Length: 179
Image 1 (cartoon, one colour):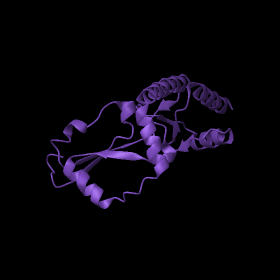
Image 2 (cartoon, one colour):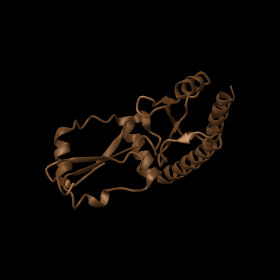
Image 3 (tube, one colour):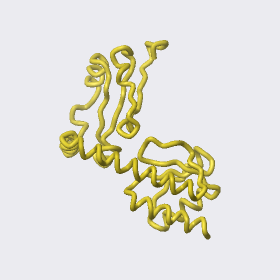
Image 4 (cartoon, helix red, strand yellow):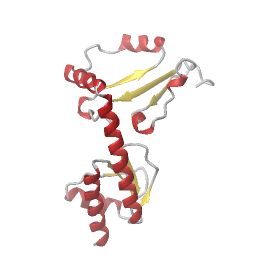
């Protein structure tokens, strides 16, 4: 960013609340930095399609000139405001998701399933020789898994639910592997 001051850098911090690391400290130093965050993940407000950006005053003024002031629906604004009024709920939700994620990763490892990347988010990317078949099997059992083979060979991605839900997911994977 420092080497390219005429290039605008957009950093997506959608998973900031899970990861805990940010580049916000660079905002005052790097005038070409815009950070985006969402209420979709840690605040569990995906259906409201609401987020925000963090940058220096000049960038925010430029963005405000371009954006439609009515682009965020009133129910979304109310939901985001209510979420901000109860930050403790978000923290407990993130803690619960992290525990369920760790439980799920541990379960996958016990099944000798390779984790593609160490997740700091609310999803896990894992690999299986039969990823497409596994994704189809799980979907036929009411569990939605994204087939990521078009990006990473034999990869599937699953969003983390409650620990009870992730236990059911592991049972379904085990049933598939035992076939």
